[in-house]
Figure 1 (cartoon, helix red, strand yellow):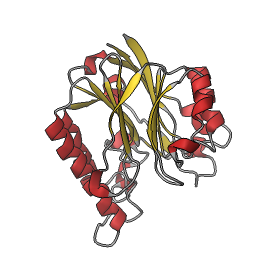
Figure 2 (spheres, one colour):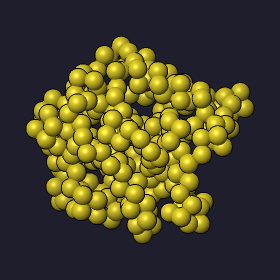
Figure 3 (spheres, rainbow, N blue to C red):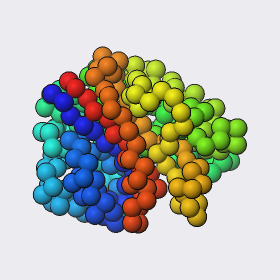
Figure 4 (cartoon, one colour):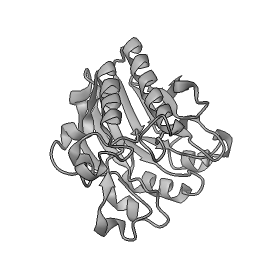
Length: 262
């Protein structure tokens, strides 16, 4: 069974319902994972998405913050919804597709502005969240699984516009990169995007603060598609839809795509 998958931090699913529908109708992913939905599940525009062909949904939401949803053309059942680090946030949902593949959708905490847990509680929460992810996947030993989402870390030097300038900036600090690597190793996850595009600068997020984000191109690759090693070879045709960052009233993230033949 071949299917396409996309992950996108939408930065309010209600505010950007039209953009989600545009992606659905123009790009036709079979599975669409959204983060930062900023809405309770009962207020998400699920009827409109169902009318576009995405009638299978697993989601966790909350008012005004966080929120994750998997919208699928393929029949799917909820498989897990974990509250890592006990934050009480809607940051994880997993669905099992009818072909047996489990899709994990994550919105890892951003971590605030200061990369020091002693003075910034949010940074400590981010590290704790990743540690609990690591331990959970170590215990789970996942198979036939895909992990996607806004992981809020750009791990490689070519995942940011300037490695040296961002070494002390939250999302690219060595301690965050190490925590993410441990989480990846614990689950046996393979970075599908970089498996397909091994070289060169690659970004999925550009700040709203940039007057001309496209020309400045000071991006970071915060959004990821991973797969367990048993199915990693089935992943291909990865891409980032950079143009979506330029749509009207856009999210500051661009969707990341991959295809899987399973």
